[in-house]
Amino acid sequence: MGKFFYIEGAYLILAGIILLVTLFVTTRPFMGKGAVKKGLTGVALFLAVAIGLHYWATTSRIKEVEAAFHAGKAVICESRANRKAAQSVILKKENGWRLEGDYFFSDAYTRPFFAARCLVYEQ
Image (cartoon, rainbow, N blue to C red; front, side, top):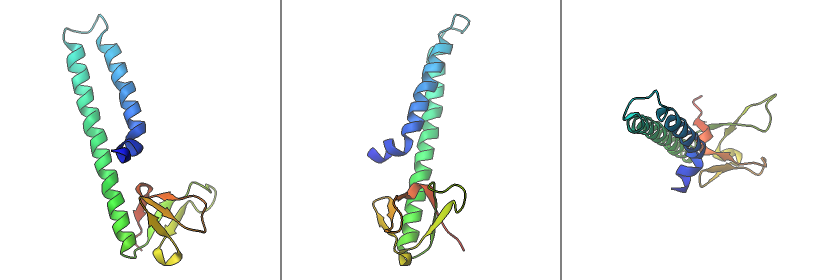
Protein backbone atom coordinates (compact mmCIF):
# COMPACT_ATOMS: atom_id res chain seq x y z
CA MET A 1 0.00 0.00 0.00
CA GLY A 2 2.94 2.30 0.63
CA LYS A 3 4.00 1.98 -3.00
CA PHE A 4 0.53 3.07 -4.10
CA PHE A 5 0.69 6.27 -2.05
CA TYR A 6 4.26 6.94 -3.23
CA ILE A 7 3.38 6.57 -6.92
CA GLU A 8 -0.10 8.10 -6.85
CA GLY A 9 0.25 10.62 -4.01
CA ALA A 10 0.22 13.72 -6.20
CA TYR A 11 -2.75 12.43 -8.19
CA LEU A 12 -4.67 11.69 -4.98
CA ILE A 13 -4.13 15.27 -3.81
CA LEU A 14 -5.29 16.61 -7.18
CA ALA A 15 -8.32 14.32 -7.04
CA GLY A 16 -9.20 15.73 -3.62
CA ILE A 17 -8.99 19.27 -4.98
CA ILE A 18 -11.15 18.32 -7.96
CA LEU A 19 -13.74 16.79 -5.62
CA LEU A 20 -13.79 19.96 -3.52
CA VAL A 21 -14.35 22.07 -6.65
CA THR A 22 -17.12 19.69 -7.72
CA LEU A 23 -18.72 20.00 -4.29
CA PHE A 24 -18.56 23.79 -4.46
CA VAL A 25 -20.06 23.96 -7.95
CA THR A 26 -22.83 21.45 -7.31
CA THR A 27 -24.01 23.28 -4.18
CA ARG A 28 -24.66 26.55 -6.02
CA PRO A 29 -28.28 27.74 -6.20
CA PHE A 30 -28.49 27.38 -9.98
CA MET A 31 -27.76 23.63 -9.83
CA GLY A 32 -30.64 21.19 -9.91
CA LYS A 33 -31.85 18.98 -7.12
CA GLY A 34 -29.60 15.96 -6.58
CA ALA A 35 -26.64 17.60 -8.38
CA VAL A 36 -24.33 17.10 -5.40
CA LYS A 37 -24.91 13.36 -5.24
CA LYS A 38 -24.73 12.85 -9.02
CA GLY A 39 -21.76 15.18 -9.48
CA LEU A 40 -19.62 13.80 -6.67
CA THR A 41 -20.46 10.21 -7.57
CA GLY A 42 -19.63 10.65 -11.23
CA VAL A 43 -16.43 12.62 -10.69
CA ALA A 44 -15.23 10.33 -7.88
CA LEU A 45 -15.86 7.25 -10.01
CA PHE A 46 -13.99 8.75 -12.96
CA LEU A 47 -11.03 9.79 -10.78
CA ALA A 48 -10.87 6.39 -9.07
CA VAL A 49 -10.80 4.56 -12.41
CA ALA A 50 -8.20 6.95 -13.87
CA ILE A 51 -5.90 6.68 -10.83
CA GLY A 52 -6.34 2.89 -10.72
CA LEU A 53 -5.45 2.55 -14.39
CA HIS A 54 -2.40 4.77 -13.95
CA TYR A 55 -1.22 2.68 -10.98
CA TRP A 56 -1.76 -0.55 -12.92
CA ALA A 57 0.19 0.79 -15.94
CA THR A 58 3.03 2.03 -13.74
CA THR A 59 3.41 -1.19 -11.76
CA SER A 60 3.23 -3.23 -14.97
CA ARG A 61 6.05 -1.14 -16.43
CA ILE A 62 8.10 -1.60 -13.24
CA LYS A 63 7.72 -5.39 -13.49
CA GLU A 64 8.65 -5.32 -17.19
CA VAL A 65 11.75 -3.19 -16.56
CA GLU A 66 12.91 -5.30 -13.62
CA ALA A 67 12.43 -8.56 -15.55
CA ALA A 68 14.36 -7.20 -18.53
CA PHE A 69 17.18 -5.98 -16.27
CA HIS A 70 17.45 -9.39 -14.58
CA ALA A 71 17.51 -11.01 -18.04
CA GLY A 72 20.55 -8.88 -18.95
CA LYS A 73 18.79 -6.45 -21.26
CA ALA A 74 19.51 -2.73 -21.28
CA VAL A 75 17.20 -0.30 -19.50
CA ILE A 76 17.01 3.40 -20.28
CA CYS A 77 16.21 5.87 -17.50
CA GLU A 78 15.63 9.60 -17.42
CA SER A 79 18.50 11.54 -15.88
CA ARG A 80 17.36 14.70 -14.15
CA ALA A 81 20.89 15.58 -13.04
CA ASN A 82 22.02 17.13 -16.33
CA ARG A 83 19.37 18.69 -18.55
CA LYS A 84 21.74 20.26 -21.09
CA ALA A 85 23.47 17.14 -22.36
CA ALA A 86 22.72 13.45 -21.93
CA GLN A 87 19.17 13.36 -20.61
CA SER A 88 19.01 9.59 -20.35
CA VAL A 89 21.20 6.88 -18.95
CA ILE A 90 21.41 3.31 -20.24
CA LEU A 91 21.65 0.80 -17.41
CA LYS A 92 23.03 -2.72 -17.66
CA LYS A 93 24.11 -5.26 -15.09
CA GLU A 94 27.45 -5.67 -16.83
CA ASN A 95 28.17 -1.95 -16.36
CA GLY A 96 27.95 -2.21 -12.59
CA TRP A 97 24.29 -1.38 -12.07
CA ARG A 98 22.30 -3.23 -9.42
CA LEU A 99 18.62 -3.35 -8.56
CA GLU A 100 17.63 -2.92 -4.92
CA GLY A 101 13.88 -2.91 -4.42
CA ASP A 102 12.49 -0.67 -7.15
CA TYR A 103 15.64 1.44 -7.50
CA PHE A 104 18.70 1.10 -9.72
CA PHE A 105 22.03 1.95 -8.08
CA SER A 106 25.57 2.38 -9.35
CA ASP A 107 28.75 3.47 -7.62
CA ALA A 108 29.34 5.87 -10.54
CA TYR A 109 26.12 7.86 -9.85
CA THR A 110 25.20 9.70 -6.68
CA ARG A 111 21.44 9.29 -7.08
CA PRO A 112 19.37 6.17 -7.72
CA PHE A 113 16.89 5.74 -10.56
CA PHE A 114 13.31 4.69 -9.79
CA ALA A 115 12.24 1.76 -12.00
CA ALA A 116 8.88 3.42 -12.73
CA ARG A 117 10.73 6.15 -14.65
CA CYS A 118 12.59 3.69 -16.88
CA LEU A 119 11.86 1.74 -20.06
CA VAL A 120 13.30 -1.39 -21.64
CA TYR A 121 15.87 -0.24 -24.19
CA GLU A 122 15.26 -1.97 -27.52
CA GLN A 123 18.38 -1.57 -29.64
